[in-house]
Length: 262
Ligand SMILES: [Zn+2]
View 1: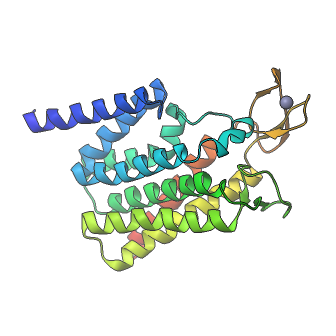
View 2: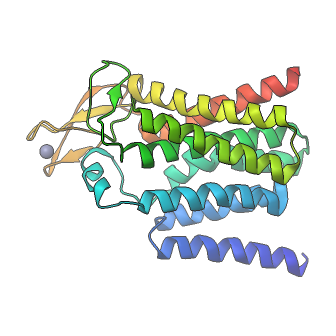
């Protein structure tokens, strides 16, 4: 192994550890971020790491942004803002698979998978982190009623703009780093937005929704007011992480199919 390769591996390890130290990631999240970084670097080199870094840094900063306003989300979301391994795998797992695939069997199609999966994760994270700051309550796509901000399966005008911006930033960065043509940049952008929309749909129809039996608050938590919540909708094995992974993976495979056909 060359010294510069060791330096990069050391850099990924230190970066993951520092993210853990600053509570952006839980220890399990820092470990899977290290593996994700390693696989993406193996497949796509430093450019791949930069693309992953844009997603990681912007979403970490956005999740810290106006954290006081977002405090009420702790009542709705199953997990806090420090990401655990399942959240890292849900957002970066498909990109890590693309990295491993490109390392073993180099093919331009894996770059499409990488870019789309990161665009989708970025779009979705920006939408959740910025959408909740909207003055207006979002509308549930299932009931068309206004629901508390932060509810899975709800949309707002501001959140939709954040979705498009989040996908566009990754599509443009990927286009610039890897010299992708405008057609492919546009395709990555579209599939990134589609991934976030699919995430909202699955969040509304498949994701398990719970309610506190004491204070009756709708929540994604398994425990509220110190007692177990009861499930009121969705499938009980499908939490937000599963929905994130399925939506990003699905649009990446769809992009792969389009790439193969064109
Ligand atoms: Zn309660």
